[in-house]
Image 1 (cartoon, one colour):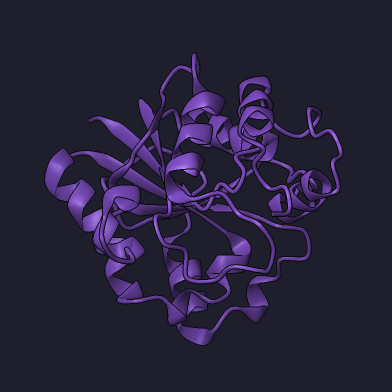
Image 2 (cartoon, helix red, strand yellow):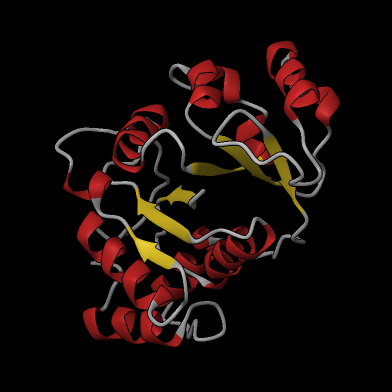
Length: 213
């Protein structure tokens, strides 16, 4: 059974915590491949200068270059409309087949609002969920419908691996690194070589990304 992970995000910019989480998803779940999928048209953006979709895709490709099993997937960048997670997973499931073990990575902050996602209950028929636990997460705060899924679907081992339908919490300790803070530092002219892969830092410098107009 082939094992594939899906890691979506704005990646604006792609930074070291993104890379660390992609590696953890690959290694903790013993995946053959992790596909990083930059959002083409993000729904929610804060104020300030941001990179466009093509630039963000380029930064992901640069940031994961040479990393075994990590690939950049441009499907949402080239799409003409906003892409819901369930639709992206439907497309991947159609491409990969029903027997592929598919894992969708989300943060525990997103899990707390999962019941607001478009067609959220259908996610479990398409993929397993890998949840990156953030500091302060408390399952008791989950919406009742989501808590029921959390309680019923959690697995802690892989004695019975399955293409979809389970939830696994990642053991990785989160890193206090935020794209918003990196953009703020770049806008102020500060160096961010400690926050992003070297090739990404060079790309940002060369194009002058995130600098005020």
